[in-house]
Length: 72
Image 1 (tube, rainbow, N blue to C red):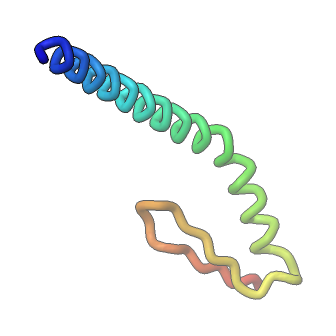
Image 2 (image 1 turned 180 degrees about the horizontal axis):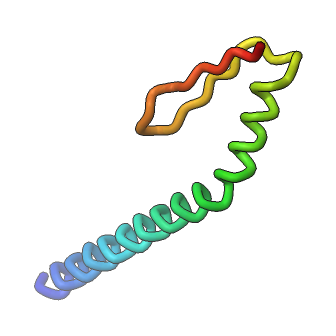
């Protein structure tokens, strides 16, 4: 019985380590994506907002309220 208990504790520790690795990866990916995509996203948004075909452009970022742009 103690062998089974030891095995389960080791498996729980392995899962904690795996979950931490996944969390770290997601954080790195999120920061890299934001840094690499922001220039292209800003340029694309500006082009869309100044397009004569656009009516209303709504953009937003997770922690901010949406920004509504109305081309003139």
